[in-house]
Every structure is written in structure tokens, then in C-alpha cells.
Image 1 (cartoon, rainbow, N blue to C red):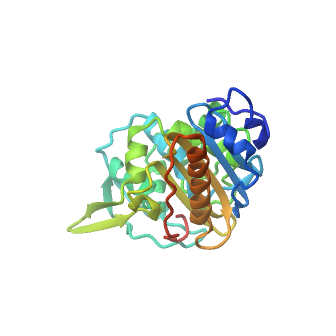
Image 2: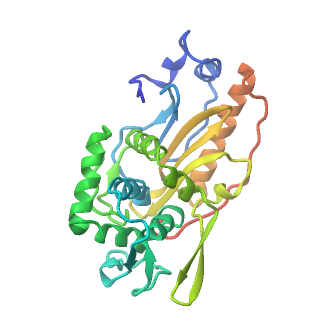
Image 3: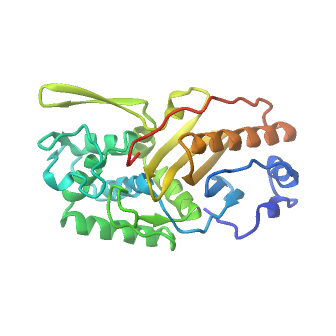
Length: 295
């Protein structure tokens, strides 16, 4: 993927797609309230919108996209049973988890819960069960970031609970692009709910991004995040106006800001596509959803 080092208005070039030229000429680009944002045409590599895209910020549970990549790259047995231990308990923020110490799930189930429900103990258990343990896992995360060309990114844990897990909106777009190549990350991060059996009890978990429940949003990858230092974060790959688009929003203030920003971006892109003849429907949804620490 090409990341073009140009300003937003530099999209208005003769070789740009029709809807991109309309965007470049439009003085009414959406007012993004998130501290940082980056919108990318995944196919062409064109930057459609950016705001503080190279500012280094905490990323909370967007971290779990890298957790999933490292785990899948290791090609470990997805059916191996892994216990949740005291080492997986969040002592930094004392966040709540429905996975009690002693629960035993397969590696694949833990991955699903980490991506879809942003389950911190699931992500921690994946890291602690990695060959060499958590330290080796975090090292692999940082090495992968280097390989993906993410200079503004640093990981200190696999959950995102650490405020020292940092990145930029532009780096996160690279991570989303890489993660989208993994079938399991696409499927697990966008599934509306998932049920696991813990002992003799069945437990159902829901997706932290309520937009995945709306059939009018063609979302191919999703991850949310929240800790106090990071604000509310959102990363998605989706189809908008007939094009594959990556949206990254960091440090959104307020419960619904990141969803409202996503809605504004969608409306803006679809309106521009309608002007260029690519697509002529503009639809919106009500802001929904909110997460606990980690989500």
C-alpha cells in the first residue's frame, strides 16, 4: 500500500478517481471531533482525509489487532486449551472481566473474544501462552510493527491496558490493512456475538462496535478501544461508495464521538460519490454503543 505524503487537497489531481476529485474540491469536509483521524482508499493508497495523523497517541485496545496478527503468524494450535490465570488479571486498572481465573478456553476462542468483545484476559492469556511468554510476545509485536513500517508505534502489552502502547493514526491504518489480510481477524472482529462454554456454563459475548450490528454498514474489520489516556478509539475497514476504505479515529471525546465521526465520514464520502456518479444513496444511522475499559 502506498501512503502518499501529501495534504488532503493534493488529491485533486487529474489522475485521481472521480469521487476523489470531488472530495478535493469540496470545502465542506466533515468536522472531525476525534483528536486524530486518517481515512484511506485501501485500493489506491490515496489519503482521503487526515487530521493529526502523525501525532503519537495511546491506542488502547486497538492493540489487539497486533496481538491477533502475532498469534496467527506463530501458527500455534488453535484448539489447544489455555487456562485464564492470575497473571491475566488486570492489576493496573482493575478492569472487569467475565472470564474468571480458572476458566479454560481454546486458543481460537480466546482470539475471538479478544477481537470481538475486546476481552483483556483473553488477550493476556494468548500472550502468556506464547513460546517464551509475554516478554517474547511483546517483542514479536514490536518487531512486526517495524516490518510493517510503523515508526510511531510502540507496544508494552498485548491488551492495550498500558497507556504506553502508542501509535499514530497513519500507522494504525497500516496495521488495519495488514490485519485485513487474515480471514480470522476479519470474521472474528465483525461477528455480532459469540458464545463459549466455560465449565458447565454457556456465556454469550457481544461486539464492542455496535455498528457491526447494522446491516447498512458493510464492515470488513473492526476494533474499538478505550482507556482514560487514549479516549475512545475506532479502527475499521469497510466498503463505502463502492470502494474499500480504512478509517482510524483516535482519542475521541465523549461516549458517541467516534461513532458520530464515522457517520460523518460515511455521509461525506457517499455524497461525493453521488456527485461523481459512483453511487447516489446517502444513509445515516443513529450513534450507538459504548464500551468499558479496554473496549
